[in-house]
Image (cartoon, rainbow, N blue to C red; front, top):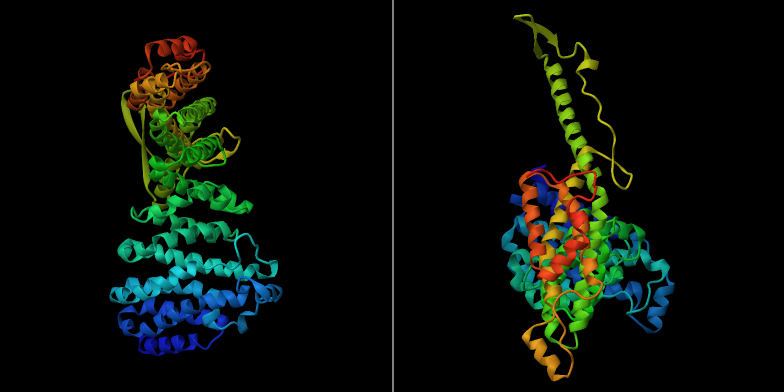
Amino acid sequence: KKARDKTVLRLATSSLRVENEENALICLRVIFDLHRNFRPSLEFEVEPFLEFVRDVYEQVEGTVAETFGDGGGKKASDKRKEPPPAPVSIKSTRSFKVQTECPLIVMLLFQLYARLIPSNVTTLLPLMVKTIGLKATKDGETVPSHLQRPFADMTGAQVKTVSFVTYLLRGYSALVQPHRDEVSQSIVSLLRTCSDNVATRKELLVATRHVLSAPDFRRGFYPHLDLLLDEQTLVGTGQACIETLRPLAYSFLAELVHHMRLELSMPQIRRAVYLFSRNVQDKTLPLSIQMTCARLMHHLVESIFRRRNDPTQADEARANLVRILDATVAKFGTVKPQVKLLLENGKKAEAAELAEQQKAKASQDAALGVVVVVEKVESTETKPEIVKADDDKESADPKEPTELVGFDGTVQTPSDALKSLADTKALVKTLVIGMKTLLWSITNFHGSTQQTQTQQTAGAVPKAKGFREGELRRASGFVQNGVRCLALYQGSECAEMCTHFGEALAVLDPRSFLDIICLRLDALLGGGEPYELAPM
């Protein structure tokens, strides 16, 4: 009852300091529920709890040393041989699980009582930043098997603290800014050492994406890109983490590389092109992530093209452009065989959804006792016939639609089939639009005045514009496979896509354009395919 709310809150808060881990967790749940349900009257009872939180964070370094050792010497060796203590023997201020719960409650208190934020952030933030940077072992060492559970509790508490720090970025970024490099370093370190727990890693990746949304803060990750380009750093080594978190991880990585694209080194570009070109062809990733990876590859084209005037990087830069071309053309080749089935399933799915809507309406009418009037025409007279909606259910039920089977053999629901069609259309549009800049960059990579002067000064033969031997046939796959993909679109959409397709080919020099069209004229004109472009 409300009359007892302050008494219960004071009792729970005072008990926190003297109880063990197990009982302290119960006290924390009581405190959370009381503030959530009786918030107007408890504002002036908050300070004792915040003092407890400060004490927890002040002692966390000692807790780490006590649990895992001080990082070397006999004490560390002895600690690694000792089993972890039972929850009933762990003091509340020395508990990682208690520390895990604190940021969520502090976040609630800051949302409820905004006046508390300025005075407490200045004291809590440095302690939290120090906490997320703590390590259980030296770099390169592994945590003993009998300490894996405390280690998981510790990293879980650190991840919750990271989430709280990213929460402060929304309205108090100026206070967090001085700690930018420390926070970024700690997040990358957590990604590398975090246990393979799906929930923990997912929360860490979500918090990391929030950091990227702050323009002044994202630069803290730039020095760590080489580590982040390693998939094991992003998702760990556990199979469940790999299968669940790869879409989120590569979405974050694509956003980071996009912001850094003009500052990337050539090895970083090469690694990024490899990763994202591989992901574009990865059927285990959602189509939306494949599209993000394709868009990121095309965003790198400008950064790569800028290297053409550097003799030490020009050849490798152009080779990366060709790799992007190969990945893009190959994706058109992957989508092409799916077009017919995607269109057929899309039509069936639309019919199934319409039938389901009619069935639901009929059931609703029957439940309400609605009478349906059906008119029959006999000779010249029209006589109304009264039919109840539930008189003949078999004749009223729409015909069951045939089963929808995707290209990979999996059974799809109508909504899945429509989503697959929409996502594939969005992917193809991304690829077609990206081809314009890509084709122009490859064919115009050589031949600039500055390049010619540099090559003549060095006594080398200037390299000509256009495609090299073998590249023309590979580029012609854009016509061979891409034209057929345009059958996915209808009406004005089809007209728009044909325009984009034509604009991509129009950037070619006349000789290359003619060669590509001659090579793939049959594909351009139909080539016996069983489906046609939609009329425009």
